Image 1 (cartoon, helix red, strand yellow):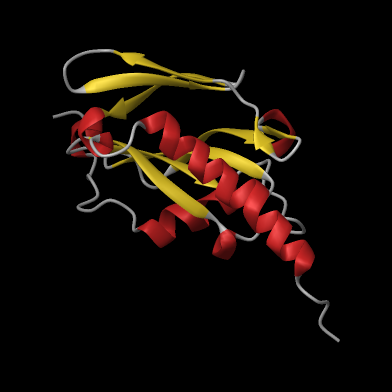
Image 2 (image 1 turned 180 degrees about the vertical axis):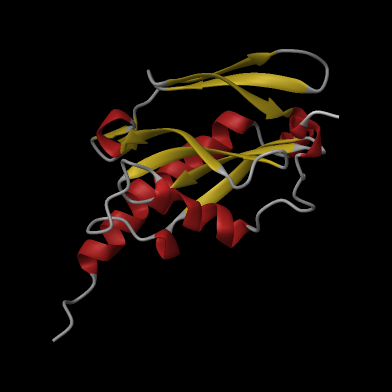
Length: 153
């Protein structure tokens, strides 16, 4: 057998907290303006070997893939708030379409296109609504509530 055939698969996916913490490995992560502890994540794709997550902070949206065949989760892309939000509303285009019976594809703004999502994860609420809600919650509502908090001192 060749050495490549001895690759050890991880047994479990990263935890929710681990996915959120993984964004600090992104080249675009800014520890001065972003805190993984304040981030929120949405699982959008799930198979026995791979998961895809959207992770939102007050400043960026990250696309994270957790593949059991890889050592750790990988940040596929990130998008700044200015490309997602304007005038206190979600301005990024969210377009979804069917791929097959189990999966769909979603485009988020100009940067993210053809990201797979698992339809069964969005039976109660459409993926576009949940992505819009995630962006709104972290980039508009949380930012506004942070501005209303009195300064410590």
